[in-house]
Length: 104
Length: 300
Image (cartoon, one colour):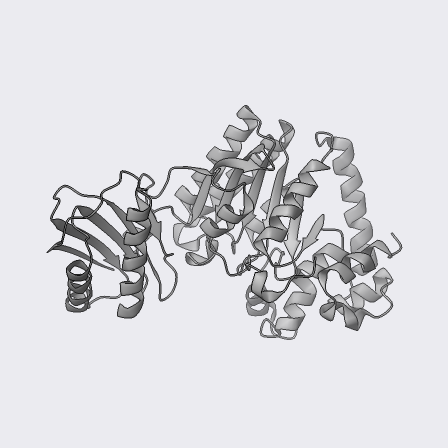
């Protein structure tokens, strides 16, 4: 297992109090828990992954996500069982939509 | 209950959370120890494996047909739904709370191969505590109904737990047994049981066989709405006295008679013929309604 920590600048978005979870820690899949974070213009990510040595790939996928979404003010925790970058991108978008949609 | 595939929402393919959302009255579910609060398994972390926030089981309460229901749902996609220490503690806590607070029922959505071997004794103890807690809830007058239709079925210790429940609702895709097919093949050899022969595995452990044998009270389609109506209808008609020594003895005699009648048979086809099914080879192709009608016509 490898533990990774990242922090990205991101446009401030809605920050409801209810956390959102999506995905399952199954083979080739991951679960993502989105909660409100400390800094309104920052997205913090904490990852536990079964696949070692993919830190730069995670940084690229997460950086792309933070740049293209209003994910500021969130803390994102991920448990990963070997999801591909495409799956990670889709799950991130899904988790953020569920988190921010839950505010309404 | 014939449904077009388009309107179906497969129970087999749904996650534990999706099953709960479709099973209970819309929006009525409240989770105990939700992911943001729960602890992943410390044992898996020691083995350098990523855990799940909810340790592979969702517990809480909600309503089914306006009645208060406690729910336990195992996530089969996470480590085969296997029972570890925290996973087990969440189940036991829910069952003990049911014995005290007496909801209309506990619905136990089983999807598990049994003990999580990574957690060794902690997992074994958790299973034994679950067994005790199921019996305690039933003794307190709370029916505990197992719902089986996930990809992992109910095997190992969870197979025993399923049979300790008040009743079982199962789909054709569901499987129920003690030792899993691969375990039997590994220990006894492929001549004893070929775990690659999926049709054989289903003829011996699958929902249709279990229903014909009287191991399961209700057979439903592989559909979340069918599980919902199956569970609700079953609970509406539920009227069983608290289990006692007399019912246990009668059950034991029934099992002895069953072993004597069918113990030498090696395939579901042979068992169904002995049950009085005229065309046993047609059973795997029957739809749910036809199979229920077939069982009702059998000599008992």
